[in-house]
Length: 182
Image 1: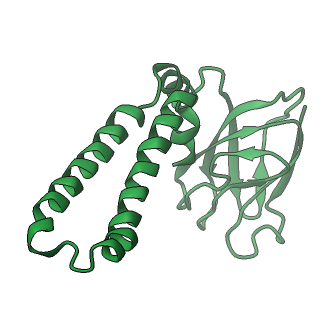
Image 2: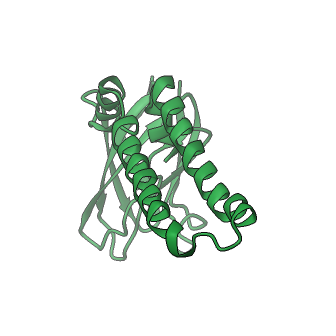
């Protein structure tokens, strides 16, 4: 919700705010002011104008949400670019087995998107998790059965990271490795 609100222009935010204020003012006046002024409100003769006014205000609110609530084309383009997979994603092949994580020699890692392609060469299920100062994305893979393969896609900024198996006590048994980005 906040992401959509941030994508709206100032004019759209003001338009939605004005129509919302009109809707709130109508509701409060129909609830508190009209019954004080006309004790039998809406009464026999006041019901149809009240119902018509309710429909008009409701239709106005829906129309304003439709017209003012649209994201600008620039915001849609920026969102699509952020959601699209990065063509600069770097792939790291990882092999897991009891109780080790085998990574290639990684030097000069720069911040960006990384795809860990994981192969479980062990006899029991494993997964791969990563922790550190700036991990973007889902930092843990699905459980990988023996002989199976999996993927972990994350964004890493400059910093030191720990890669490990998060199943049971596998980390304590030695399924842990360090990465330095930056």
